[in-house]
Length: 74
Image 1 (cartoon, rainbow, N blue to C red):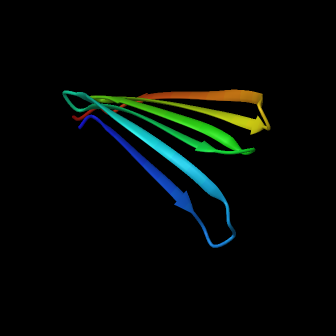
Image 2: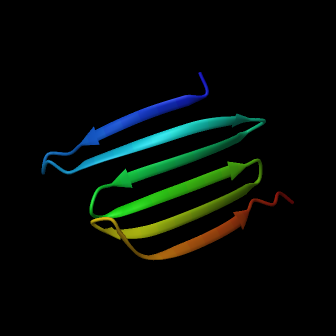
Image 3: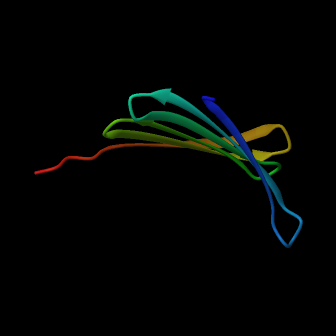
């Protein structure tokens, strides 16, 4: 299957849910939701990785940080 869901509960009772989608050819998309805290999305496409982090306050987004990198082998 190309999809997986991984719920997590820590010892403080905080809950998070991660969803991963395999896109093929070393590519994947992972979204992790921490209610009332953050939404993190990571897209891996071969040597490229893009990360988006959004702070959450209820249903409001408190801004987004975007990072993109590429692995280069010499």
